[in-house]
Structures are given as structure tokens and as C-alpha cells.
Image (cartoon, rainbow, N blue to C red; front, side):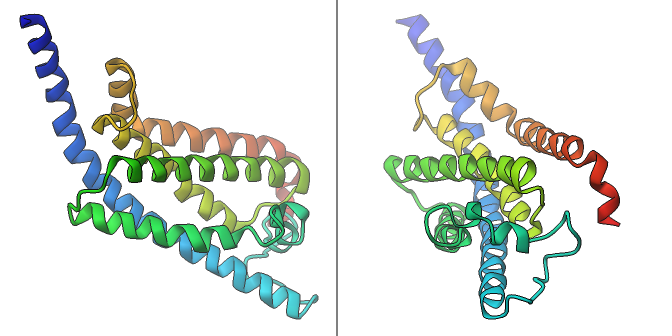
Length: 211
């Protein structure tokens, strides 16, 4: 019995500080990151509409043969589900912003809600990773607004997962929970570095087109 109480106390000491800290950080991340993602998604839709209205229109996010939105938007990958991908962002990011505001307001949300957000964030992270592979290795162009969505979606997923682990919404061994919660920033940084390195390698012999 004494051993069990000791383990419970150790677990509580870990959970409470991390839960309070991660909720505040997560709230700001969801509110600010969601707003940025919504803006980028909305701009992509606006540029797509203008491009449909005028095939000769040059999107404001198209700067050169490498950094261009037009090539990506006109590809089949740009409308994977039969409609422009940014529509998903316009629909999803307002929810993210709302959850962020609720978190900052200390509104208690049920476990199923947080798990649902985590599932959505996982789907978003998987989708932007797939889009990264498509634009980098098959389309051969980098969409600035798309990359903004990547940059906010990845940390939203990582920090949401960390919060759910620290709250016990996601069941995992204590050592794994500590590792993920304590390394959230490192995980995001490494993820970004991997993407940056892969982009640099793939476009190494074409960077002169950027300037």
C-alpha cells in the first residue's frame, strides 16, 4: 500500500505542474496558430478563385518557378478530395481557435473533446506531411501559404498530444508521458529541421531560380 501511495504521489507531482503549464501554452498555440492557419487557408482560397476567374492571373504568393502557389493549386494534389485543400483549413482552424480561447479561459472540456481534437490534429499533421512529399518530390514547387499551414499544424499536433498525455486522456507509460511532454519543443524543432533539410537537398541544384 505504501509503495502504491508513493507511486501515486510521484505521478501527481508530474501531472499537475505539467498540466497547468501545458494548458496555458497549448491555449496560446491553438489561438494564435489557428488564426495564422485560418488566414493562410483563406488567402489560398482567394488566390484560387482569382486564378479560376483569370487563367493568366499570377497569385500574390507566386514569386518564381520554385516558390509558387499557382503550380501547387492547379495540381491534382491541390484538390485531393474534389475541392481545394484550403477549404479544410477554413473549416478546421476556427475550431482550433475556439478551443484555444476556451483553454485560456480555463473552461473544462471533456476527455472525448480533447481526444477528438487530437485525432483531428493527427490527421492534419499526416495530411501536411503528405503534401510536403508531393510538393517537394513530385510537383517541384513550394507554396508559401501552404508552408505556413505546415508550420502551425505540426506544433498544434505535438502540443495537443503532450497535453492529452499529461492529463491522462491518452494512456501511456509514465516515462513516455514525461519524455513527450518535456520534449515538445525539441520534437517540433527536429520535425522542422528534417523538412528543411529534405527541401534543401531536393532543390539544391535549383536554388538559383529563386533569385
